[in-house]
Length: 89
Image 1 (cartoon, rainbow, N blue to C red):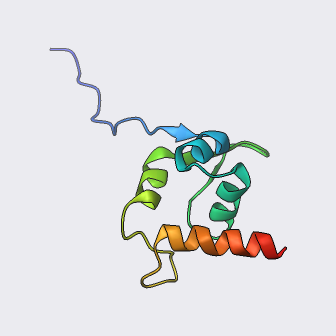
Image 2: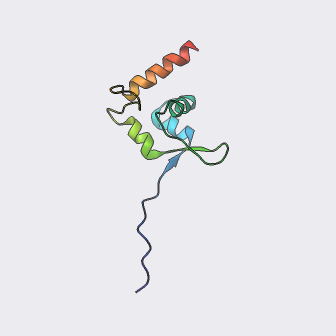
Image 3: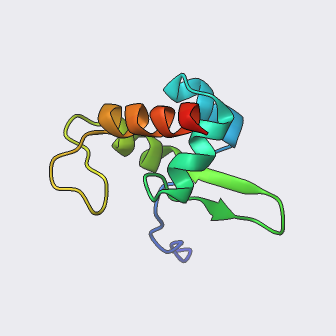
C-alpha cells in the first residue's frame, strides 16, 4: 500500500488590498487603516506585498464583531469612527 500523505489543512485564500476593499465596499485606504487599527490582520510577503486572509475579512464583517480593545463596538461603528477621523484630517 502506498504511503498516505499527511493530513493537511485546506489552503487559505489570501486577498489583496483592492480585493478586500471591493468585498467590504470601502476605499483601499480604509482597508489599510483598519489593518493599522487592528481590525484586520495583514500578512506581509516581502517588503511591499500585503495580503489579508479571506477568513479574517469575513470574520470582520460578522454581526457582533468587536474591535480588539472594545467590548460592544461593531464594525459599522468602527468604520463610521474612522471615516469621521479622516474627514477631520
